[in-house]
Length: 289
Image (tube, rainbow, N blue to C red; front, side, top):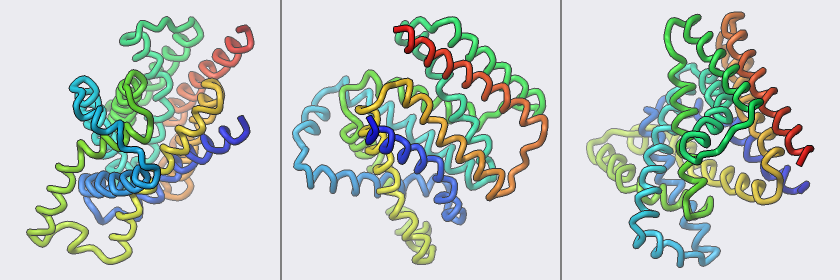
């Protein structure tokens, strides 16, 4: 249990610090960053599989249309989530990104109700309603939907749903997803390079180094998360997951100076209240079982 908490906390801390990493790549188009992230993640993951000599699952997955189809869809959702997140960080929307991951647990409740026929308890529905009020408030105050937050929450929510019912574990699933995306990613990188464009041709050595580092920085937190999830309860994971958006919020405000005016604070406050209700309800229910 103790080691599981450490693994999970390290994973969520790494994800919470991601804005600092992607700010180093502000000179590279967000789409190109994701293409590099995909290719170098695959290289890293194939290295892990080679060390572990863990290949048997891959042939089975590629020959099973249902499994392959599900992971093609999850790969598309993951790419959309990555592109939105990198764009948000590079364009001073770190707070909006953090909002998306604060909303995510409550999106998961709604998706579980619709697609998995789960029956949320009254306290969980109350949390969803309060969070919806927070999103509505932010929409009214800004005059537009907080689309960055909603896209991040919805794409990762559906991604998590597919992974929950998927047939592969964390390492195998991410490998298959990056394997699906890599032909497009590698093709784009080669095309840009052939035409004298792209970071590999135009960027300095430090920027290229940051891009290469994106591979292990993508895979390692996920592997830590998988190790932690096997060792701790869901209620504990539910509390730990708030480390990531909290760090993103602090980084956005204190490190990058994004505005956190009173009107926005009210919307965030409603969503934090929803998360408090959600967490306390889950804790209380676990004590009764």
